[in-house]
Image (cartoon, rainbow, N blue to C red):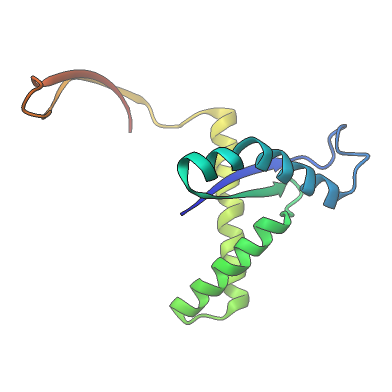
Length: 137
């Protein structure tokens, strides 16, 4: 199992203006690895890969190799040309990151609906549980 963590940074920010783009990617990857890799390997028994993207559309070395490998597997599975599959995967990542950024800035478009007392079947030793849930649909 592999755990991916995505980070998007701005190469034109004040902290990154003096660094080269490859140094920015390397710094962001090492920061994520320092923060999560040891815990995920020792406790969760997972592999960790930080996927670093810049706001200008580039991606770090780990993200590049992941996209290439995923595109190769998808192109073989669906018997499509590799170059169109790579383009499709990159577009999907771009739109997913864009949707996440918009959701963080604006919030969800769906309205919250309040649902009263939904009964869940618990184990035999526990009585029926009643919850008040706030569902976002």
